[in-house]
Figure 1 (cartoon, rainbow, N blue to C red):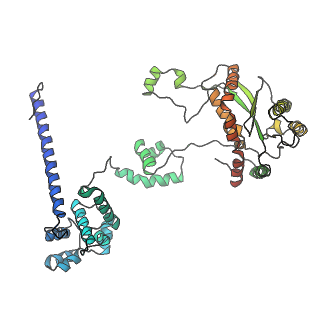
Figure 2: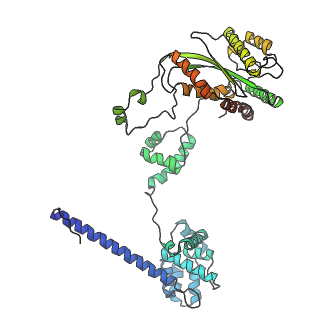
Figure 3: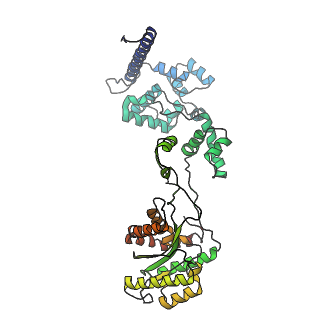
Length: 465
């Protein structure tokens, strides 16, 4: 017995008692292991002719009758098995009725180590040509399914006699209350999927942790964010124009398309609710160590902003213009901007916008875009190379590559933090535009327009994801 110096007498006695308990437990485990090995050797001891045998068949049958190995039988059959000494009668007793098998299988009983050994022995006897029970008969004999018997044999082929030992399941077992809540919570969420875990926990008087485990682990559900979409007042017009645009793409393959749009940029920091996070040991530690601009982001009413107009082409080119502060973008101002686009087309493609194979100009149905003076200017200087106000589907920003991709990418790159002035914002947009709006990126997003139109048509002009 080890002796520990520097401890009081009471602590020494406690330490020695614990050491003796550990030694006794270790000795008991070793004796149990040796006993199991001897029992396995007893079951699989082979005779000279290569067949398996048991040293005590009568002991096995007696255990079967008592329920240690087999299933429980009726009183009349058990008494008959005790009175008869005929081997055939004993074999009949080992085969219970189908009703008894169903009753036992419903209890999901687990096979003991001895039962698994008997199953393996019976299957091995059948393989060498001796009379033995089939997998179905073995399942009936022990009150389990045929699949369970097959799993026992598979485990024996992979691990040998070690497969007989039962493995204790890892982890904490599921509580009874949690199992009872599973179906109730499923029905409740089917009726109202917008319930929160906190509300469910308060409703069923359980902890938030247990309710979260029921929802995520037991039911396999995940929380998803609701997305903001535009209201569609006239689905008939949207569907008709989507079909018209889709047919135009089919009739004019390979034509260069120009997509235009405007956007207001503010000096506020780009905000993303899902990924706008920071890491720290705790909230109190963050308050003591991190500055305010890391832990918080501010929003002010009427923040300074600038107005940007842009055009992108399906072959990878782009153009943008920042309006002067205080400019009201009406039809006249928009026509002046279109004159800049006219010059950009001539410089980029070396042809006038009204040429036969010139790029096709498109724009949404904003008032300054669909006004009479704007449409007259487009007809005069772009000829047939523009989509009139009857082509673009109403309330459909998801069609424009600037709306569904480019604007957000520029805003995120230009404003990693809150800017001090509009001038700094304009300089940031000019700096990041060539870095973000690359020809490869523009081609990629513009190529999605026909498939988006097809999705709108397939969805009967409804909302699309």
